[in-house]
Length: 344
Image (tube, rainbow, N blue to C red; front, side, top):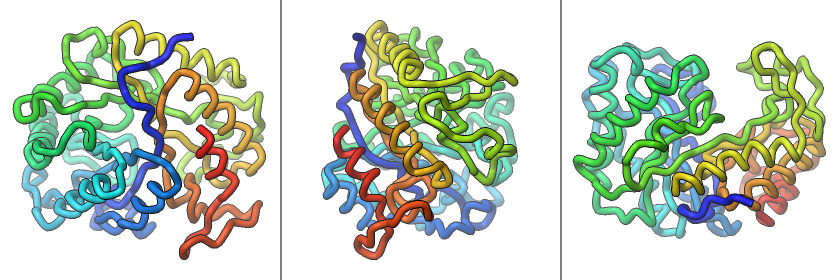
């Protein structure tokens, strides 16, 4: 069996403190604070995990009238998160989930397009240069960068590779040795083999754990017809170009085996940077899916970061009402899901 062997097998969660800009994003209505809660880092460490991914929006700290202008007091809470990671022994992965010119979410608008507008690319490089300079002295064992989140299905790989290469070069000008992670194409699901074939050093890759969608995204309010197909596992449906494709453990093994084989072939690291299941999926179905996902990833030495820690995909405060959640330090904990994750 092929395995990835370059990265440690990081295991943890996404934390959303700086995920969206309060002034412009509808996600700000969910109480995102523009900063991170130290208790989250403490609990994640106490539960036995070793990794947090921080999906960020550049609009949290950029001036509304000038996307190149960085407001110090608004980006400063990111420093706290890096320190919390060090304090609690968690590797911190910084991701520009919303990068100038692109985001997979439709919660906000962009003044330009990363794929076609040179100004957008220059702005994206500007923000990454600032972050690289800000954290240049943090050891790679403690901190890595994730260029941006999930290039969409309709963006060809050559275009994505060109943008990735420009961002990597901008970071390397300042921080030559930083570990950089690039998401797969097709919403993070397909390995970016063109970039893997380039000569960049210390680049790793991130896949996704959101298949099949009829299980992971059942009932998600921002997706049309998200309750059209009953969630079952095994046998859950992923709709691809109008075709309904059934997924089971064997198909998971083939999918993540593809990532592991490429990791071995190119000598690169792989992590599953996002995975999870929306709270409206029946709890028993979710646990059965998670068990197979965890086993498949572990057998291939691929780490993971659940989306998210607290929230509708999380182990805390999910809003789930089909089981009794445990009172835990002022939160509602899905103990059974936590116990399952801890095994892997």
